[in-house]
Image (tube, helix red, strand yellow):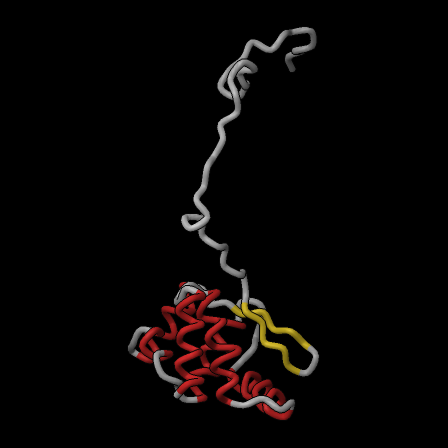
Length: 149
């Protein structure tokens, strides 16, 4: 082992030049992108379920339904499709969750006073935003269209 005690810093790639002024970054606020939320959450029965679609899960869903997920959420999809998407989004964080488990969660969520339309608006659309399908602005306008219909 070498002893470097008493040796002065000779510089190098990682050394900073003391005479050089630090670089200032000027970022236009319009150019700066807002960072996406890491997850969507579904709160049922006092428990919060973390959700986000990963590329592998998106591929499984697209193969199952033989279409792009964007086409499926353009209009309110059937309940079974929404629950399958939610199951896929929960599975990386809820090991072993199956479709019947998600159906039970949905039933409990409905018993808490929610509706199928709210599942689409409050759960599925935010899930699609955090999974990179929609920018937040597009999601807001989509939800406004649904409310005005």
